[in-house]
Amino acid sequence: MSTKELRVYVLEHRLDVEALEVLFSRRTPDSEAIIYPSMFTEDGKECGRQYSYDGRSARTANSAIKWSVLIISKSLAVRKKKTI
Image 1: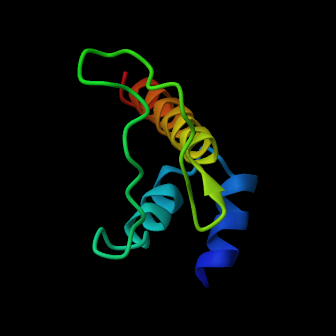
Image 2: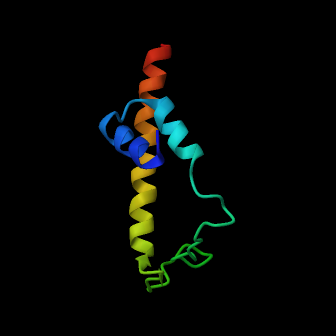
């Protein structure tokens, strides 16, 4: 299954943890990843600016991270219920 097909499958079967793990294992290597600078200072205050690289904004990156965390937390909750 191609990564594109797997992505569609994961979106349709959000509780399939194995498919999600395979999709995560196919991610871009860190050497090729775009690393966004922090939007916060070292003391935790906002810098007050938005960053943009290759037409992608840091806000979009944050949305993707929040989505991933939500999916993982739901998957872990389902896995925890199965083991109890």
